[in-house]
Image (cartoon, rainbow, N blue to C red; front, side):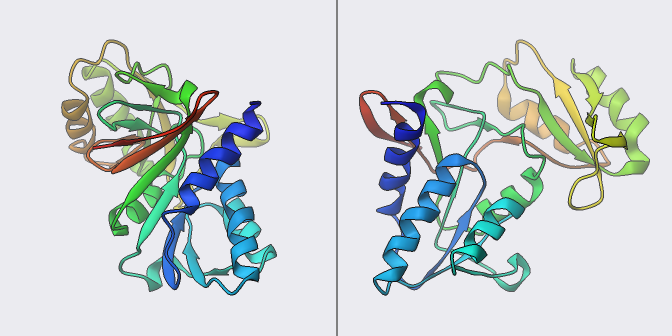
Amino acid sequence: MNKNEIKQSCAREALKYIKENSIIGLGGGGTIAYLIEYLVEKIKEGFKIKVVTPSISTKMLCIKNGIEVLHTSSADKISIAFDGCDEVDGNLNALKSGGGIHTKEKLIASMAEEYILLVDDSKFVKILDFKYPVVLEILKDSLSYVETKVKELGGVPEMRVSNAKDGFIVSDNGNFLMDVKFEQVEDIQKLERNLMNIHGVIDTSLFVNVVDKAIVAGEHGVRVVSG
């Protein structure tokens, strides 16, 4: 199977978990796009669902395909949420470094009765190796302070920038995004606690005790990893 076929098989497995007349959470990425495609086919047959999402791309794709999207603030709980990640390990610790929307993603994960990651097997590792940075969403006023504190924790901070924009990248919430590189993390839960205890840090892209399942797809089929 090629990469697209692997993503499709993962999305088809995820579809089995979605109940009619439920509110579901959807993150971003290619596998989620395939899941939306399969949902549209079911909706044409009369299947009804509503969606909340932290992803602008996913929101627009849902609207384009006639799927009702609720503002997240209007829901207090959702049945199930699906998302991707950069890396997830056997203990279901995950790292989401790309999109910079992890604060809203964690909110939706907390609202969900079940939070499931959809990944190909190249993203499933025994233990997180932190080849991707931990992203911190931080208050603008806390920049220098947070830089100092993460260095004390052994991190190497770098503010997120883009060639397409002057200055630092600002999150959807109006805050700065700081990429922090760590090596040889011995206690992932402790690192998460220490980062969250820094005043000015709103949230991190390290997901600890958040993920319920991971649907892992690869050349040899699909498997479900549970906590």
